[in-house]
Amino acid sequence: MRVPIVAANWKMHKTVSEAEAYLKRLVELVGEKPPVELVVFPSFTAIPMAGRLLSGTPIAWGAQNAHPEHQGAFTGEVSVAQVADLGARFLICGHSERRHLFGESDAFVGAKVRAALGHGLVPILCVGETLDERRAGRAWAVVERQLAAALAGVALADGRNLVIAYEPVWAIGTGVPARPEDAQAMAGRIRAWLQQAFGKVAEGIRIQYGGSVKPGNAREFLALPDIDGALVGGASLDPDEFWAIARAA
Ligand code: 13P
Image (cartoon, rainbow, N blue to C red):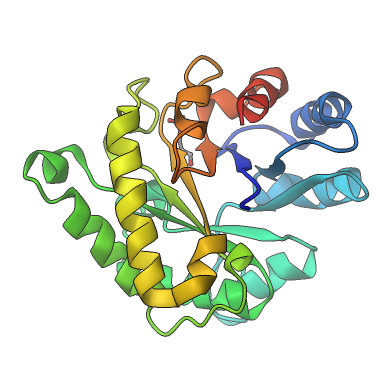
């Protein structure tokens, strides 16, 4: 039985005080035993506060990004080790904004995934095709390449240690989500690929859908057989909207 996982990727939003007000409200809404796993991804600046405020609550938190090297001359970067040191449990790896706006390669994303696992963090590995790639009939080829590159040489003892987020690039921040049948078709192929790669352990790997998830459409995605949660951007910036999405699971 996979416990659904619903995550809030705030991207580059919220000051520390805005983040604090949000998290206080979310803690109030969520109560002690939510039926789903909830994760928030604040900016680095708000992470220490989030760690303090969320400790002892059922809400987990993580970092939106980190550098795979342990330490070194990488001005402006924050390492996976530094994020783990703060008590983060999750790390987003390979988000399309990192791939497309910051030029992250498949190999670099793979290094991050391995660094995250090495530090006991759960990577949320994002995969997804652009609109041109989908139109050219290459959606699966792109996603398969991203999976293979990021997970090469990865050994998993427990499927709960890895989450895959299928986020078609054209659905991110556009208000135009994938059709549920297309999201399910892709998630099913991802699941089959994971089974080939990891065997029985793959049954425990959660697959999220991301891209214009809102309270009004969350249920359609979360009800799909191979989708075990959502990675939410814009609609996660308001705690009430985010909780409405989580409850749909
Ligand atoms: P939106 O929910 O704003 O489309 O963003 C999705 C996303 O990129 C989550 O990581």
